[in-house]
View 1: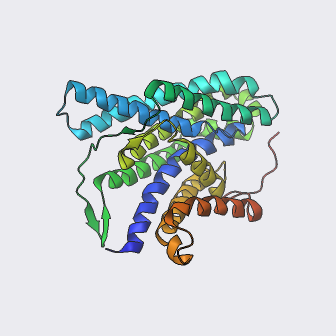
View 2 (view 1 turned 135 degrees about the horizontal axis):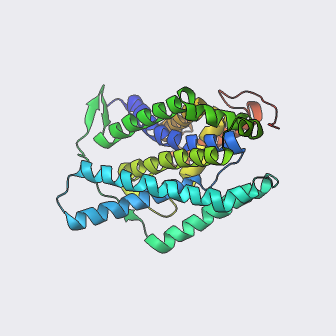
View 3 (view 1 turned 45 degrees about the horizontal axis):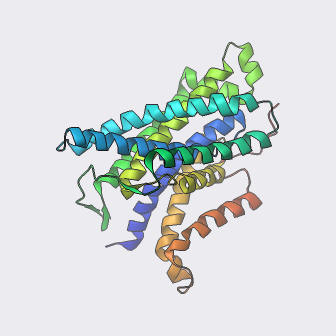
Length: 309
């Protein structure tokens, strides 16, 4: 087995999920200048809703085809997460739009804790096993092994990321989002509703996070009420690495972070003479964030811009 290529594939799979989540951070920040730290919990809710959907289907129809169950999981998780994000935006963030920037940031952390607590009350504190809905026989590609679910993650993430980029850069809705991001007051003079555009950004980000949650649950076969916390931080790191506010940068940052983590997990022990094991890969991820904040705070694709009026 080609170990290096295997780590590259693993990194792309992990980075694809980070990229889906990072786009939600960067869209909201681009329009509201808000870091929505509750976004990782949206991923968790998507995974939990998918688990409940799968369990209900298998109770009714134990021999249901896994691919159809997976599709039903996504179709239930996406609207649930979109509704949740709309409620959070309306109740927690909209009243604080004119407040100092520290207020919505603290609120976002509070919303994250509230969502975790609610999930703990609904689904319990113990981890749940997410069923294998796809064949488990691996596919060999150039000496590396990829499970069908990993190929699905790569394909679904690539399709969704491409669709979102086309939506933002090639459609009227995308032009409205970019206009509001540039100047909400001027966009309002042109008849563009800032509230509707902000809600659209939250909905799109939540839909991507929901799919990311289902894919993560499918990949690791475990869901838990805290499962969104660390991926949320990693996705925020990816958005900063790529250039927060830049959609292409969020995708690039997610893939870079996934590759760095995977390679660190595979080679960190060898590079440090066994001093650091693979479970110290988070040090590399957040160390990379610190370096970028020190030497290139605008990120890989970001540009230095003056504060928006």
